[in-house]
Length: 295
Image 1 (cartoon, rainbow, N blue to C red):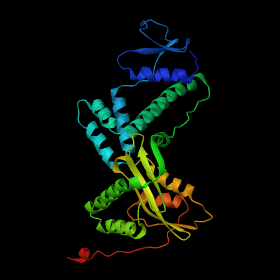
Image 2 (cartoon, rainbow, N blue to C red):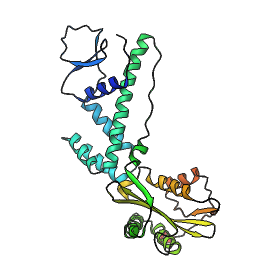
Image 3 (cartoon, one colour):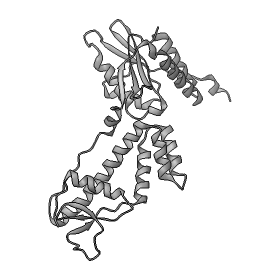
Image 4 (cartoon, rainbow, N blue to C red):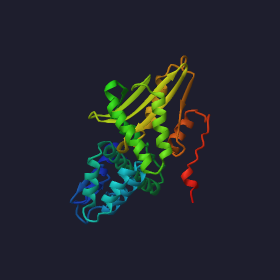
């Protein structure tokens, strides 16, 4: 009954598990997947594959949706999962409108299924008295970022960057945070003369859609990051942090001594990125909203 779980066999098992319209068994002697085996077949030679049904598939979609950091897409997928009939088609159709996240879903699904198969194989190895085997984790964020193009900004990006900036300001205003919106506008106007400024990077999708940008202004040996903004549909994929790191990698550290960036206190995730890159808080700004004092 002992067999080796090769990469090819693992892929065959994965494919067969997803084909719920047929019953498959593993021929442990030949190391292949077979169907249509008689019920009186040798149970030592032919064994059942890991169990996988529609309920398992639904739970996997729920798990993936919960991992998304983009609230807009998370709400869309949650609505698809809650519609009752036709949830699998609704989930698939929703993802088809977000190809970068769709690729992340396929990688996530494959990784989780392979983990389930490996756990099943390890339970057999426990029975055989053999040492367990492990799995190599995949970096799904890196796979997703392969679908984006990171390049230096040019003048033709100005309109798209301005539109995104206006959207972000309105986003804060609609959330009731008018001070942060004011701070964003003021910092951008005060620090940038004309886009793209002294150094700016743009992100676009493989189809050429504008996705994000980072802009800076240099004053002597100090570089000020005036804006780092990502379109809502592309948030939660690691684009912002990658933009930030690529900017730092392009700097001439002999001519740039300090990098500064104003950070609204509400944006905790961005603050963590700065701290990971050895930034330290320099100034604490307090704001008083007089309307809050009105009883």
